[in-house]
Image 1 (cartoon, rainbow, N blue to C red):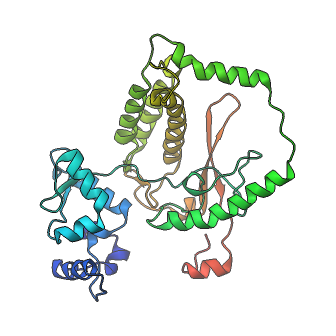
Image 2: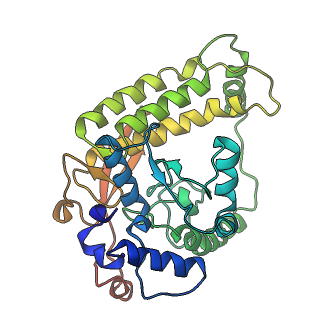
Image 3: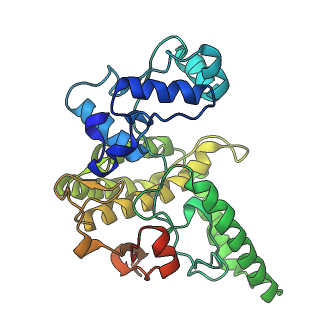
Length: 335
């Protein structure tokens, strides 16, 4: 991993295998050390790019990943610190990670965007709709770092809960519900169950996953992103033909028939935003625009809206200036 470390972060990581081993040995005993952490513990986006590059250049595992080996640690320590990982590899792959390497690869872990909300109350632009946590956008910038999600939930979960409660207190009367809209929604929900033949929602999900992994993955280029937009459109055209077998009781396929619509919206929003941002920043990496363009893109967010005809509009908006007291904590940055 040493060669994949960003130049401005190399000083944070061990320079030799011996130093890395001293850090691991100390950490496994719960002790502090003057040794620096191994470069394999770089940020998730950087490790993912390294794995992708190794596989692309022909040094990957038989299944298109890399080997991660922690079997040099005491077996009891591994089982105590990583119980779920140990159990999953043992049960699903018959691999004992205390005795040998495990095969790993990058996958979708989190998103940086989300619903646009007011920072103080969590209110969205839809009256009565509030959002907090990973669904809400704007807090994590270009790279959601590990551990930040918990503080996000604690701080903005409290703000959003208070904001939603205050909104509800001002609207004591029950809102009018249009019976025609209710009947239309009921027919829409029942339609996949009433079709005897049609598209399998699991097939649509699988095809969408393949498109996003292949064309909108860790490294992106304009041609792939344009192709992905076309492919997403083709998959969306199959939605009206979705058919689900089984009844209404605990039918995950019936749920997926509607969830896949949301997956398509999010996938298109990610793809169009990635196409629009002609630079590399944080976890967004463009091979055709590898540098960060602070002059053209610094302090700007992509904004996705739905047009009246249902199509997707992608623009940008300027971020508000960070207060001086916060900017000083982050090294004096203005945004």
